Every structure is written in structure tokens, then in C-alpha cells.
Length: 258
Image (cartoon, helix red, strand yellow):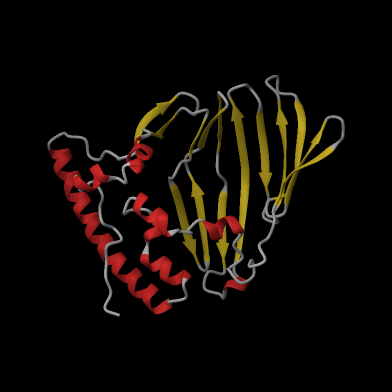
């Protein structure tokens, strides 16, 4: 493979009044065409949480630092009003490109020659207003075709019954499923914690992910989880071995009375 993306999943969050703030901690790591890239994620704020959807506000704020193994780097500033601006420098630190735009509309660059080039244009779906302001991409994330179901592990998030019922407009069922999932989740957490305590007492490895392994990354100077490639191998066999070995925790296997 000539490309692989390794996004960091650790996030700290704070809430106060009707505001929630999410701050990703680890960098994103990308390998593309033989070169390494890394960048940090910025803070996301959601305001007016208890208001109707039309009155809620979401904005991103902060500075993104992008670095490539060939020496090229970028500094991108994202403001509360959605303005984005930045510059790209070469391995000698000289600026050869400037960036500007709005993160929810378009993103362009200006070269040394003064010529402007549009890089990204965000297109709004015709269903944008009806579906919570989601883009086509966002609305497609939970899409599930019947022929895909046998190829998925039982822990795939598209199999969540509460989300599926919510999308289908079955609000009462969605609430019931969510409550049952929360109860089941508490039981799973207790089970895993007990295993972890026994493992530590016996000086054994506490937890080993199925599809990833943690390694020191020289480029970002952090520990990151790297794909073992076994997920795609298992998918070809419909996860038969993992199912026989009960490798999956049945996190979505709940039922409701109605």
C-alpha cells in the first residue's frame, strides 16, 4: 500500500452551561506516496446545546500545524467566524504559497505569481436543511446496504439499533434501544475492568486490540496505534475465525419490549 491514515482518537472534553468543547490530543499521521505527513486537530465548540437545532452553533478554532518528511510545512489558522488562512513553507522555511477561505464553503491558495487557485468547494446537499445541516458525506457515513451486512463484524457502528431507528424516524424505539445499550455498556465495562485487574495482578498484558498495535513513531515522537492489516484479511472470510473464538463483545446485542 502506498497510503495509510492513522488518526488519533484521544479527545478531552469540557462542558459548561450550554457549551461543549472537544480538544483532540494526539496528531493525525498519514503515509502517502512514500512520504510522511502529520498534523494536529483543533478544538471544536458546540453552543446552545439545549436549544432547538436551528439555534445551535458549531465552530472550530485554533492553529493547525502540518509537517511533511520532505521538509514542507504549513501553518493554518482557523477562526471562530469560519475564516481560514495560512501559509506553506519549503524545506528552507521560505513561504511559497498562501491559503485562504472558509472551512464550510471553499478553500483556495495564492502562489508566488499572485495567481489564485480554488482547491476545495464544499457543496451543500439539497437535503441539507432537513437533515440537521449534514453534508452528503456525513449523511452517508451510516448508510448500510443489505449485501454488506454479512461482511461486517458485529461491532460495526452501522449496526447500532438506536441510531438506525432514529434515522428511520422511530423515536420511541430509538430511546428504548439507547437506554438498553447504556445498561449493557456498563456491564461490558465492568467485565473488561475485572479482566484488566486480573491481568495486572498476574503481570500480563492488560488488553490487546484485534486490529491495531501500539508503536513508537519516530516522525511524531509519540505512541500511535498502527493497523496490523488483519481486519481486511478477516473481512474476506466474514470474520469466521473471530466469531468462533468469541473475539467480539456483543455491544449491540440488546432487545426491547416494544
